Image (cartoon, rainbow, N blue to C red; front, side, top):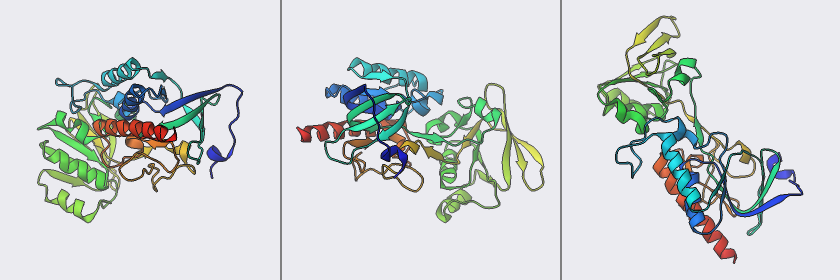
Length: 324
């Protein structure tokens, strides 16, 4: 067991609540809306990135209800206001330690910012996942200006244009074939001399006429001031540098689930995604539920995250109801 579980948490001033929500993306806010309407009086701690990954997305065109589209920060502010309208208390803070109780009806203890202690009857974890990036200054500067980590989120904006996909696994192959349906040309940059994607996905890539794969090739710099104007690539064998004229750069090298706090406490897969039971949001700890990208490495969409947030609140409500 990790120290997160085994070291007792003790404090003189313990705040006792029905429902604690950790994380403030679409899953967290949707859980908050449903929990608040069920009179569970939820308290949410937002984490360091209030609003989650969507706050780095300039345009959101695929979330139901926004006929003219919106932008990520505005959408998250709308969700926050809706959650607060029903009585959710949204607090800025980071959960730094947990002691989860394996007994049905047991109270779960969470330390926030290493000082504040919460004792909760139910906990909804919606801490999400963080997209991996290359770490280039030019890449980070142009996130939202043509650099993206989600083709299904942002690909529409590059319809009929030329784009680059960086990566070699199934995710990169899937993103490239998706983009090939709407973009004029897709260039995949593969760092090694082979793709790691499954044979089936490689066949799909090779059969798609407007996809070109460049092996032993890496991004040296993303070109552009406010928006992407191209990529300077480098052949890592010959060291030759060359420019590719594109308007979009899709980084497809994976995500890291934000589950470090729960290692050794909650069941997770080999990559750190929390495992939920069947079609529910239940974890292996009674009264602890997981929603959004922290437990979904398949879809990773705002709308699916929101759906699991709803499920988590309903699961928590039914759990409390069964205890009465």
